[in-house]
Amino acid sequence: MPVNNDDSKPQNKQSAPSKLPKHVAIIMDGNGRWAELRGRNRTFGHLRGARIAREIIEASSKIGLQELTLYTFSSENWLRPLEEVSFLMALLSRHLKRERATLVKNNIRFNAIGELSRLPAAVREEVDLTIATTAHCTGMRLTFALSYGGRQDILAAARTLAYQAQSGEFDPNTLSQEDFSRRFEDQLMTNGMSDPDLIIRTSGESRLSNFFLWQSAYSEILITSALWPDYNESELLSALQWYANRERRFGKTSAQVMAELTP
Ligand code: IPE
Ligand code: IPE
Ligand code: MG
Image 1 (cartoon, rainbow, N blue to C red):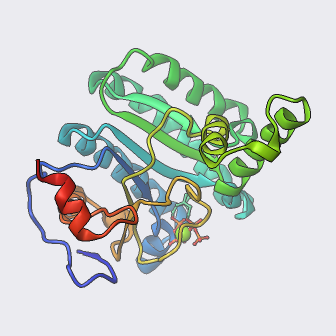
Image 2 (image 1 turned 180 degrees about the vertical axis):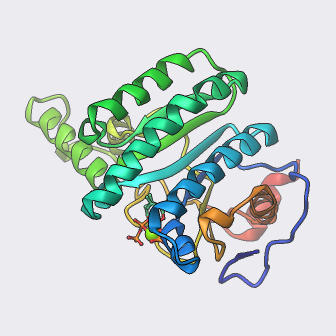
């Protein structure tokens, strides 16, 4: 069952609610602990985790989500032991190769964000091929955040804006908040994507770990205690039900939000 600091706990309803988030992002955490609990190597958890990712991608597409982003490998995950990093890279490569046809069959368009140039060439090739093969698909947009870090993305965008100001493209003294947001978001790797409405993190950790720092400003955040290899469609449906019961106020009062809803 998902858990949250909120007093309204998610309910285990088995059908998708009518009010769906447009963009769901998942921080898939807990593979290592899941394996260690079974006296196995961490890689065993990653193997199982990849299988769960496939199930959740398929379920999300069937439910009718427009966008699903999976935090697959963070910029900081390069700091892990070389053996584990190599295993994850090989798994990713294999997974993409094997799943490409299924993505097309399910009309899912694949996308990747992150410092992709840091990926080994073989993985990069699979990523590029999967993007190209699914480019015509018109259903759910699936994004893998790979070698992704929110701060790294923000720095790269800030750097571009600094160059733009230096070359006289705009005057920093008169830059409005709206102009800044537009210019800045145009430079972020998530350009063209909507902000995540719902961010789910598994394994009970209540942190973003450098994920979608700018984009999460008004995301609903659900922390579930399930370790990622134990996650399933039923957990996802509970999360969607929980989301459907949220009132998103964006700074306004509840009365204002209610008034806007009534014609
Ligand atoms: C998530 O599981 C997968 C990646 C970060 C690549 P972890 O590997 O972080 O598992 P735990 O958190 O150590 O249990
Ligand atoms: C976040 O999980 C990254 C991914 C799920 C890909 P981590 O396991 O790396 O996060 P920390 O280190 O516990 O914050
Ligand atoms: Mg972890």
